[in-house]
Image 1 (cartoon, rainbow, N blue to C red):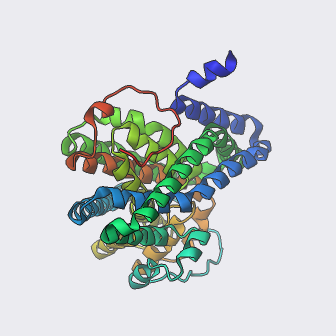
Image 2 (cartoon, helix red, strand yellow):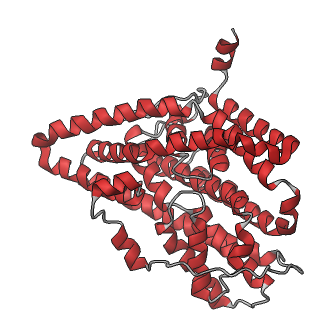
Image 3 (cartoon, helix red, strand yellow):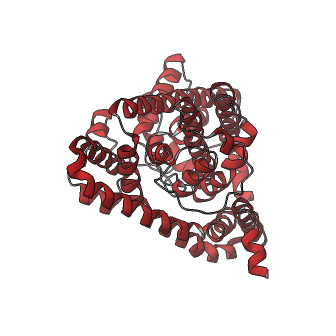
Length: 419
């Protein structure tokens, strides 16, 4: 009877319950709650197991099902255009919020030496997109290379035609197996979220965040502004859809993103979320993995802009108009190469600080609370992916509006390649 009752509870409510209970346990038990971290590690490990084969199969099946090259090209350009637009807006919001709040105050940095990382240039980022050894890319989980290789395989299958039907059917079968495996792993989500939140709250506590409260607050304010007004506005005025309905159905994936701090780790949940909104499975399988790699409004837009201003304030270094322009441009363009995994925003911040000549030592100060910030950054990234899927999907007749407004429960079901 109890199991039957639990099974009737909507998936998002299970995830929300795990989130709240985990936070409460972290507050009550303190550092002792960190013993629950293996529950979160188990969930993240299972998700990582899915990513490489799931992305490869999903991208190939998506491209082969899209049909004409004209349709694929138009979809790609629209999707990438939306990524760049929201990324630019995110960096401008970050600059505006960071400039209006005195985050530094009388704060002093600790004398910690930070070694400069070897950050590749933009040209090298483009070269690194090409998988010299596709099997190594799959083994190492280099998602951007996997996406490029999968896209090329999908295009080649379309060009070969009938002779490649056997390979096409094999990859489609592999995709269905991965979708079924995804269903099994996603059932661990509430447990994983519980363990991760208990660990985060128990590890950092509330008191350790007070000295950096203004900085954290600025990041969260900018993220909420971007999520509610930019994403909500695009859904309303460009997509012609209800923002409230969008956010209601996006909530489970947002909670997973917030607790795991991984765009790739949230990929199964976010893909499922946009499909409950009515986005076609062939387009969701294309846009969501692409967004997890390239759409980094939180990591590549908001965060480096506010962090750069924060470091400039605590070092008492004035920034001029050119510095702000360079921050915005660098944050937007370089976010393309930012991987959607926890901690990747630190690399993005290093690039931004180097461009405008701010001391890299400042990174050491904010690194201690990076996990707390990474949670809202990732939630922003994933929400942007879902918004793009809905808005562009609507413009390309890849969205079922009746399904978007339906009140179906968001239970854990596999993503299917069949429309």
